Image (cartoon, rainbow, N blue to C red; front, side, top):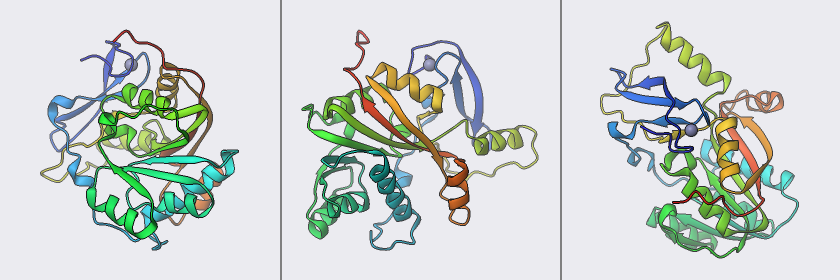
Length: 267
Ligand SMILES: [Zn+2]
């Protein structure tokens, strides 16, 4: 197996999942990307939950979207055209629209897309992002929340985002930070067998690639972006304020800026 980000061949088993450890994740010693061995199967259907009303503020999914918009408001010095890839119930787009942005969504789920269009008059295209072929530099901001880790070809995804952005446009990303303290502790605990995690019998991983700051920066360099702001957050309600004040948590929320066209990888 070669690294899916840098093509490196120096891959080391980083951790495994499943009750028999049958799902293996390999860390690339060059770019630090954690590559899941996809030959063991991938389950991305498990994420399709029910529709959640965007006005139900207490729900975790809505809380994090409100936090995303707060982050955008604080860090992006303009209001223009926004695309949310995998926009779900449309909460982020609704907040942005209400605040003066021109917004569009992209969504795999036809029913979500229809609800967002009908309820909030927001145009949502139904398309698999990796097959989305619009390339005009149209958007000021493109948002990708917890999607990157599900895409096997992250270089292709970022190249597409680069093409969708205007010069000096911004990308907003959220994804798990696999080298966060929380994940590191979990790996140690599982290695020394203090507690063995029980997986459901039908458990199959849904993430293809796991990023940390180093591998994400590597991806940005290859695809023509500059890192502007990196912060960590947690969904755990009780401690959320304290954790964000201390900038700890297992998830990264990141602002990047389009710097130039993607590096030609000769593919
Ligand atoms: Zn690599």
